[in-house]
Image (cartoon, rainbow, N blue to C red; front, side):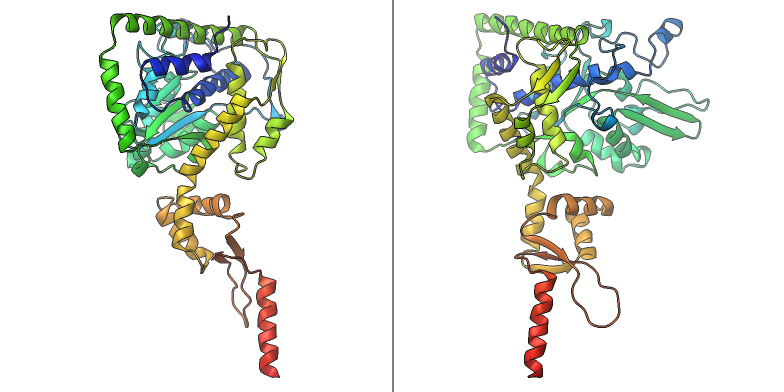
Length: 449
C-alpha cells in the first residue's frame, strides 16, 4: 500500500505529542513538492559545472547535486521561466512552537529531510541557519583579486532547505552598513534565484535554488519591501490554555517508554526513505508539462485572494500534487486539480495569511476612520506605522492593501481658483466627486435664489 505522506507526517507528529500542527504540516510538505518541481523545471539551467570541482577542489561549485539534470523546462507561462519555491514564515509568540516545526524537518540527524548522504547526491541538503549573519556571509563577497571569498550560505544551500529559528537574523542585518544590500539580494534570491552583485574588485554572480523556512515573533514581524510576496505566512496562536496543553505534552514526551521510541524511530526512517524516493522518482521520470484545472482557477479568483498572492496558492496546489502517494506523472501532463483536502488546505492557509497580513490594514483603517486626508500625508503615516520608514514600500502597500476596499476611496477634490489639486484619501462611506460637485452646485443655486 502506498504511503500517504500527508497523513503519515501528521500521525508521526501526533505520536510525538506535537500540539496544533495538523493544519501547518501540510504546508511544509507542499513546500517540499514545490521545491522539487522548481528543480525539474529550472535546474537544467544551472550555471555551475561539477567538472570544475575535479580540477580545483576549492572551485565555487557544488560537486554532487541530485537535482542537476539536462531536461528542458516544462512550465513556462508567458514564455517566462517561473520560480515555484514556497518559502515559509511562521509568526508566533515566544515558545509557541516555531522552532519545533523547523527542527521537525531540518534538525541534524533527527529531521525528516535530513540525509547524512546529501553531499553524495542522496537526499536534500538541509541546515539550520546561524543566529546572526552578514550580507557577505549569506550571499558572498570578493577579495582584492576578484575571487569569491569563502562559501556563502545561499550558494552552499543551493537545492536545499535552510531554516532560521528567528527571521530577524536576516532582517536585522538589512539596516546595518556592512549588510546594506541584504534586502535586495534576499528579494532576488528568494524570487528568481539570482544573486548578482557588482563590487569594486569583481562580481559575485550565480543562481541558487534554496528554500527558506523561518519563524518570527509578532513584535519583529516587519517584512521589508517585496518580501511579503515571496513568503507563505503561517500564524501560530498562543494563549494560556494552549500553554497548559504544551506543558502536558512535554510531560508525555519525557515519559515515552522504549517501545514507543522504537516505533517512532521506525516511522521516522520510513518517512525519510519516502522523501528520498520521491526525490529520485521525480528526477528520473519527470512530468512533461502541467495543467491547472478550471476549479483551481475559480478558487484563485476569489476576492479574498489578492492578485499578487494567487501565484503563492497556485504553487501550494502544485506542491500538493507533487507529493501524492503514488508518482504517476512521469512522462505525462500533470493535472493540478482541486480535491476536498486541497480545498481545506487552501482555505485554512488563506485564513492564516489574512489574519497576519491584514493586521496592518485594520490598524490604518481604525486610525483614520471617517477622515479625509491628502495622499501625501497618508504615505508618510503608512511609512511610519507599517513599512518602517520606507516611502516606496508605503506607496506599494497602499495600492495593494487599501485600493479596492469598500471603505477606502481616492478622489481629486473640486477646488476653485488656480493651484495643484492633489489626491484626497477617504476612510469611510464613499461619496463620488460627481456627487460632491452636484451637491455644491445645488447649494450655490439655493443661495442665488
